Length: 104
Image (cartoon, rainbow, N blue to C red; front, side, top):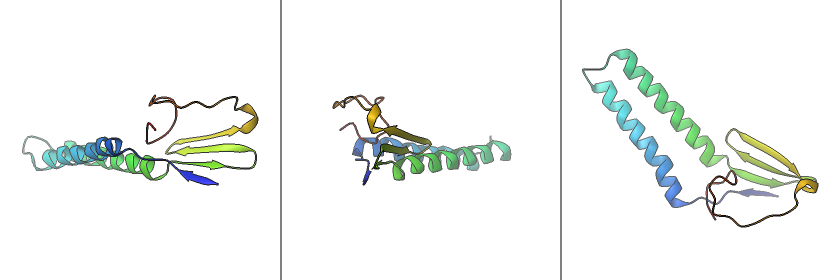
């Protein structure tokens, strides 16, 4: 069975707000007379990488319960945990405890 990650609104605002801010900075660097073409292109490419990475995380986070293991997918994170290795599960609000888009 496949389950998508719950998504917190505040986290979406932070992630997609950073995309908006990066787009603003890239646009500012592009139209600024002080920055050269190299700096403008670098800012735009950096922003595109940021956009792709955040979208990759946001739209590809899910969990699969296979026959023998739990599969966790979150952007570049791809974990496979055999059920026999899981000894306990606890609720937590710690954002570092798991690859998830929600604290719930």
